[in-house]
Amino acid sequence: MNLSQTAEKMMNKYLILQHPGANSAYYTSSEELALAELQIACNRLQTRSEKIQAEEIADLRYLTFEVETELTESDIKILSRLSFFFALFQQVNSNDPMLLRPIARAPFEFVDEKISSLLKYAGKTNVQFTRMMVNVALLSSDFHYEDRIRLLDPVAGKATTMFEGIIQGFNVFGVEIEHKSVHEATIFFKKYLEREKFIHTFDKHKSGGNQKTEIITQYKFSYAKTREEFDVEETNKKFQMICGNSQNVSDYFKNESMHLIVGDLPYGIAHGNTVGKKFKSVTRNPSELLDLSLPDWYKLLIPGGVIVVAWNSYVVGFDILNEIFKKNGFRVLDAEPYTKFEHLVDKSIRRDIVVAKKGT
Ligand SMILES: C[S@@+](CC[C@H](N)C(=O)[O-])C[C@H]1O[C@@H](n2cnc3c(N)ncnc32)[C@H](O)[C@@H]1O
Image 1 (cartoon, rainbow, N blue to C red):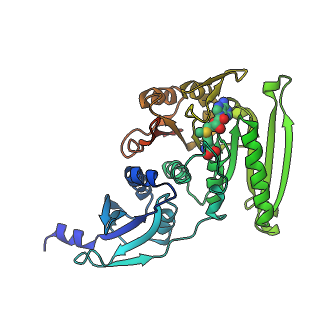
Image 2 (cartoon, rainbow, N blue to C red; image 1 turned 90 degrees about the vertical axis):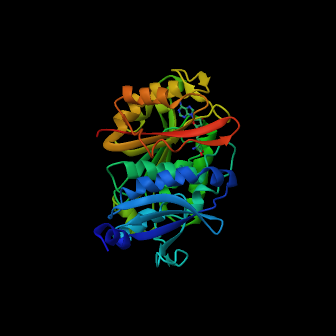
Image 3 (cartoon, rainbow, N blue to C red; image 1 turned 180 degrees about the vertical axis):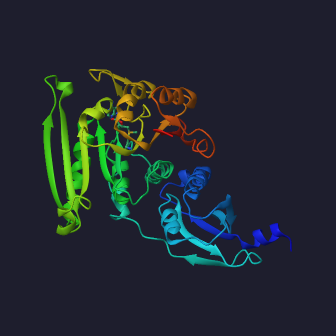
């Protein structure tokens, strides 16, 4: 047996069964997305990985990969968070590829993951896709899930991204221009905290300038599972939503900087991109909103932090958004697998993401 055969023999093969999710169209179109998310996650494992691919076994889709040494507990924690994760197996014997050993998933949820699916409404971002964006942001940043992550969604809608952040145990912040959405999301969250018996405080207040368009409403929650956790800064969680304009986020969060910014830009179908000083102009194309907002988002992001935004690539191409991000000081991650996220949502939406980092 030569050296390369010995090396091959020592590789460990793992298989992740893809979660069917609630949206069969998304499942059908998400093979490449799952693969890209896994490739990004594999860079964070403690062991070198290769042969990352999708495989059909007995009519079910698995995402598979090989690693030099067996996965550690922390590796399994990273994989368990993947948006497509359903079950993890290790191949027992390469001579019998169907012999699989199940590996227990590592529970990571700070709150039950149902929280992001309970509110249903037109224009809601697919929950699995949102989790993927949050993971891609964290895994591409210089930070770890265990850090006290602060996540901002500057176009928050009814807070799907924020709820996904809460599941991960992050402190979450959101800005949304439509009052009705902010109201419904915060009422829902308040009821949730009460029903689940979290220790919490809630504060709502208006602030801002003399002009109507300068006035913002802030909804601030602090919460924890126990009184002890609530009383300690490190374990007291924050949920803060502002009814305001994403162009002004650095004014709204003067005392907070963000590790991650994740948002689903308006597609111009259920919601437009509201731009301009008086918020009068509503467009389908998100370039103007990005152009006006990115200087502020850049200010808020900690070096090593990452921004992920989704948009409709039928309306504007990647190259144009890429330029806007670069012009504003970001480094766009535009090599594979970051180029593999584009997929069809329906006849009028082809969704893609931009992933951009502050600093090296
Ligand atoms: C695609 S939706 C986000 C949906 C959200 N992820 C959810 O699942 O609820 C985009 C949101 O951006 C909001 N928006 C548009 N222009 C904005 C602006 N200038 N500032 C803040 N929010 C804005 C829209 O009102 C809309 O709710």
